[in-house]
Length: 171
Image 1 (cartoon, rainbow, N blue to C red):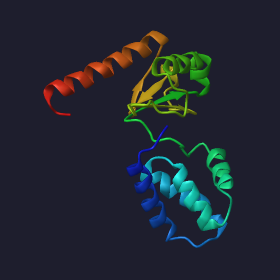
Image 2: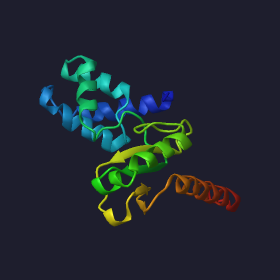
Image 3: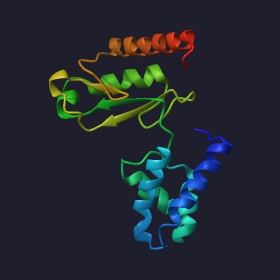
């Protein structure tokens, strides 16, 4: 996903502010990554490069740490975050099929954001709603017993809500 110049500038400013709080000890890399993610919602390449310079390590080492831990995102989150539960109950009831349906409909893979930044797609370990498996959480709203057809319905519902918001003039 391509970042705008404004997004790059903002990421640099925020990353530099955070780095001021930390010395060049490499052990501070993860706390810096966490703070950047908390502020921006993801860790962009310009932030990784800035951290690499600060800690005097290759940028690929920052990338390696970033991709090792699944708590970090490489792309900006979408306005609507779709989380597919992959816990045992959901897995056994076809969560992979639900994931494939979302990927097909949104034309993205897990961990990505749509070009218009409306949706991002994530896998989560368990949301604790096992009796409703398979479960999808959209913007913290839980949807249970999801089927591939229901994926279409959820997206259609979102589109209707968005259209009504525009027509109502509240967007």
